Amino acid sequence: MTRALFGLKLRLFRNGPHDERGFGLVGGLALAAAVVWAAAMSARGTVHEGWIAVALTVWGGAWLFGPLAQPRHDPSVISREWLRGYPVRPWRLAGALSWTELFGVGPLVTAVCLSSLVVLAAPGGAAVTAVAGAAAVAQLYFLAWAGKAVAALAARLLQTRAGTTLAGAQTAVMLAVSFSGWVPLAAWLLPRLDDGDTTLVTPSVGQVPARVVEVLFSLPTGWGHRAVVAARDGAGAGAVTLPLVGLVVAGVL
Picture (spheres, rainbow, N blue to C red):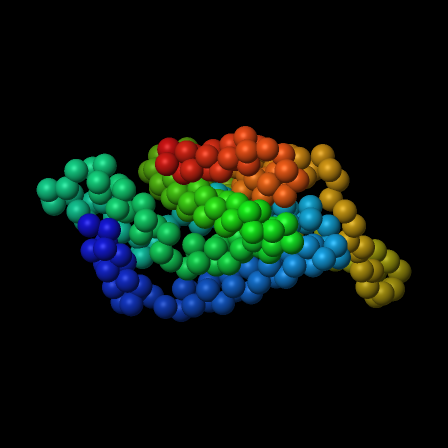
């Protein structure tokens, strides 16, 4: 069953639109490579590790809030409605479909991004690296299914009056940010522009406060990173396995 659905998914990729997918692949891989490079610098002590937690949280937030920002149907997604007439039990169909959701551009670039956990764990030895690999897989599984759940919720909300009102307000905010969102950034980088001084002020990259890192680790998007840090610091089996089990259970639910 799973093999047949993978074959169907591959045909959808071959015959579906390629322009948007190609742009997403190139842009996503570039951003993921930047996160991996920052992780390598963090392993050498050049970049504070808290910035990796920030990057992974933002990346996970894109999975969770991206469907809300642009709710639409993905032509590469296999709908359960297509297979309703087949004599297949719902639980078996759901289990087979769950693996096909990990086959796509989004999961691919996310897997590259999450490989930064392996880069961070490499100096800690083989055991810590193995934990990082498991954390990356569990984090990817959670993000993929959390994103699908949010997309389904957004599609359901658009069928209601409150959902359409919310979508209109959201579109207005996105248009305002796209047209004027550069103004705060320009004021930060060019603080003396009113005086005619166009000197660019480069902000210094320091350390992320420990309290901010703890908050990021407490979020589901940071559980994988938290497990890696616990394994590297020798915090015990419970501190390592609990975040990983939480990611798998949350993805299943």
